[in-house]
Amino acid sequence: LRDSNENNRRPFAQIDELSYFGEEKEILFMLGSIFRLNEICHDESSANGTISIIRMTLCGEHDNDLKQLYDHMKNEDNQEETDLLSLADVVYKMAKFDLAEKYYRRWLNELSPNDRTRGALYQRLGMVANAKGEYDTSLDWYQKSLEMNMENHPSDYVTIGITHNSIGEAHRKKGDHCQALESYDRAVSLFKQAYNGNHLYMAMFYNNIGLNYQEEKKYPEALKSYEKSLTIKKIHLPGEHPALGTTYNNIGIVHFFLNQYDLALDYYNRSLKIRLKSLPAHHPDIAMTYKNMGLVYEDTNDLKQALTFLQKAQTIYEATLSTNHPDVLNNSKVVQRLESKLKAKK
Image (cartoon, rainbow, N blue to C red; front, top):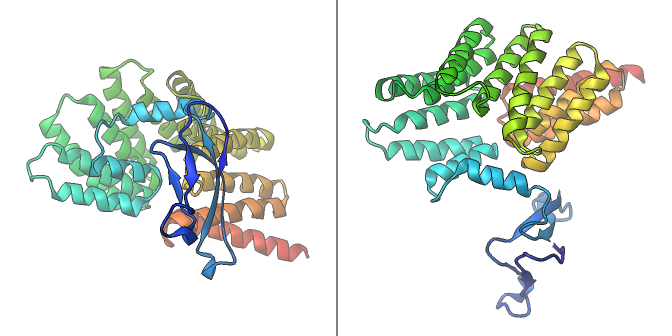
């Protein structure tokens, strides 16, 4: 622990001399303390390396460089009270998908069969299943959400549009690009009825349409959609928001497929810089960018550098996703391929 010695900060103190259990070297924090994480590592001298060492610096309320992002996310969640649902939303954003599902299901079980808010829970459970690579299950949840919202809130174009976008995502990940594009177009059409074309959710829809075109190898169309998404995000979001990291990553992918490797690395580095600042250290999105950078180095025949990035990605994937998740399996295959190439060169 280190004190930045700035104003507007809440103190901490080591209280081993005052504590009944002095040998535990306890640290007392004041509620609301803000720390900048500098490093997290394992103490290899501990039993099975199970003890984590966390080095962090105390910040003031205004001296951390992510305050704008913090304030935006706080307003974005807009939770006046903390309940099980808001906790589940937080752990979902942290990529703790099993825990999020547990909390969502518990909340769902407490609702009556006719409770109109069940549609929102179905949507969230679909998002969890999608994140875990269970695309058929996610479609089932999304369909339940859509049916309930169409019945109870037929003029809620926003909620229904978001669900159509989610259905499109599941179809895209299953490889059904025509069905995916139909769902995305429905989402865009519904939002245009409710808002102008610059609503923040439109950025998400354009991003997903870009992904769909990219997977169909329609790279100019993909790049156009990503640039639309980026323009809207820059209007609404602070510069370190993870959603910007997503779009930079995707633009990098298009340049990679166009063999524009310098441009690809430039956008990947922009994405990585944002993601390392704004996401938990073992978030799958960070792994995705590491993997993409590794693929660039593989194509440019820098195999050692490629393997380094792919191994970083694998470490994160294995820490956050199930062993049979598509991202874990696909990344593992690339690692094995690189190891084989390096052995062949010796």
